[in-house]
Amino acid sequence: MGDFSGPTWTIVIIIATLGGIAGLWLLIVWQSRIGESDQKETTGHVWDEDLTELNNPLPLWWRNLFYITLVFGVIYLILYPGLGSFGMLLKWTQVKQYEQQIAEAKARYGPIFEKYLNQPIEQVVQDPEALKIGERLYASYCTVCHGSDAGGVIGFPNLRDDRWLYGGTPDAIETSILKGRNGVMPGLKAVLGGDQGVEELTAYVLSISGRNVDAAKATAGKTKYGVFCIGCHGPEATGNQQLGAPNLTDDTWLYGGSPEAVAATIANGRNGVMPAHEEFLGKAKVHLLAAYIYSLSKQ
Image 1: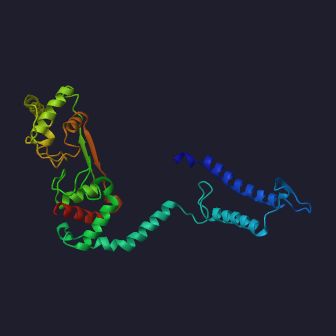
Image 2: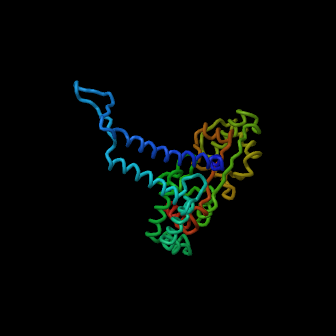
Image 3: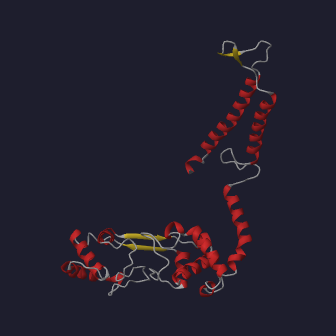
């Protein structure tokens, strides 16, 4: 939209707006003069032999309503921005109104959130009222990705269990919400030598989570795991919460646990992004939200 805010567009908008108002004014004046003579003008439409449609002027009250709307439009343009980049008398902007509304909301509701900020999350979860506030925050900001029941969907983790990519402690959960997370799993198809290498590593990864696989492929895949995967997922394949590398020995799969889904992850990689909410929500709201999510995993 930045291309429509330059000086040229301002001129175009002014001409179109004021020209439109002037044109409508002239149109009303012209239409009002129709039928002022004693001789009745007709539109040429006749029904039932003698029912003729006359071209009479607008009633005075109706015509004056049109004038009033045009005057209102001119007054509005004098007070509010409607002529390109000019701020006009009130200097109103949508950004200014938004900031004003945010400031009013903070002044009104801020103390409700702030009173829990200095309480440890373990203490906040014992307060039913605090959890209700956290639940409402979750419903507003988290359900789109994690689901209304916090059970997660493909690519977005379940928040109700005890499997945490970056840690399930109160501090870790709060940090995830405040700062966000960026999980990167590089695609390995090229370095594994193509589809065969992907199949072998897939077989090994499935085997360590208790699945029945081709033993020969799993053995070959174990060697590849030691070269390409051990740095992130660890020698025991139990993951690394500092990196967000998942545990490969359990039955929790963020992007699906079928052989096809695991193979796709290994071959093409994955990029998971949890956006930071500190600037948007503020620490007090995040503190309550973290407490609610922490409570879900402890139920």
